[in-house]
Length: 375
Image (cartoon, rainbow, N blue to C red):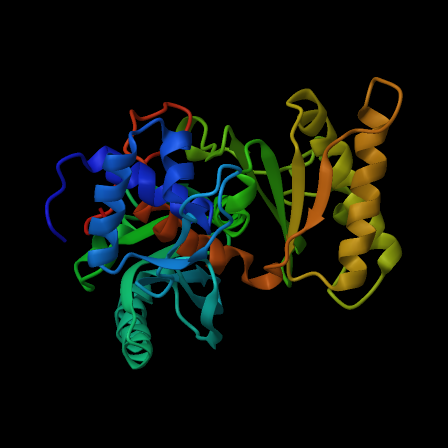
C-alpha cells in the first residue's frame, strides 16, 4: 500500500464503509465531519488499491442533481482464520472481510498444547493453500482457548482444560513458525469479538455472552464474555468472564452447584438442563440489570431445544431480579454461530483490527496492533 498523508482519516473512512455497506461519499462526509474533497481523494485511493468498490447509484436528493454512488468493501480483499483449541480437537474457520464464512472444518487430534505449534504451522500452510485457490490473501489467524489469557502478550496464564497452571508463551512459539499475525484470546472473549463483527451494523455496545458446552469431565462448562462501550472487557489480570456459581460451596471444583450431585450429557435430561440454566440466570441477572446490558447472547454446542430452555430460564431470572414494573429490557439472543462461535470470534479479532481506528489505549480493554493493517 502507498503511504497515506493522514492515516487516521483513511481508517475512519474505511471503517465507516465497513460498518455501513452502501453508504455514499456525501453521507461519509456528513457523518465524519470531513469536507467532500477529502472524502473524494480518500475513496479514490481506496478504489485504486482494490479495497473498496462502487455498488449502484442511490436516489437523487430533493433538489435533483447527480445521484450518489454507493460504496462497499471488496469482501475478499483479505481473509482471516480462526481456530478454537480444545483438548482433543480444534474447530477451524475462515471468513472474509464482511464476516462471511469461506470454509470451516473440525479436526480431531491427540496432543497437548505444547505440541500445538507444529500442528498450527502445518494448518496455516493448508489454509493459505485453500485461500490461494480462491485468490484470497490470509491477513492473520486468531486462536481461542479456555482459561485465562493475556491477549497482549499472547500468553495462556492458566487453563484447566488444557492442563496449564503457569504462564505459557504460546504466541512466541507460534510467531516463530508462521509469517502472518497471530492473536490469542479466551474463548468467551472470542465469542464477544464474533458478535461485534457479525452484528457490526448494530454497533453493539454493552452485552454479555454465555458460551456453554458439554464436557465429559464436568458435564457442562460455561464461559462468559463481556463487552462494554463496544469493547471486549478484560478486567484486571485478564480474568473477566471466569464463571463460578455463587451457590457453589466447599472445595468442589465445578462451576454449577446443581452438578455437584447430578450428571448430565448433551443428549439427556431437559429438566436438569433447565435447573442449570436457571442457576446461570440467577448468577448473571444482577450483572445484566445493574449494568443495563442491552443483550445476552447464548452460544455453544447446544441443541435448538436447549437454546429455548436456556432462553426461557434466563428471561425468568432477569425479570425476577428486575426492581420495577414490567420486564427487564435485556434481549436474549441465540447466537447464529453456535458451535463455531469461538473459532468465528477468533477470526473476528483479525478482521476488527484491520478496520480499527488508532486510539489511546483504554485501561479497561486490551488494544492490539496488527502488522500489515489495511491502511
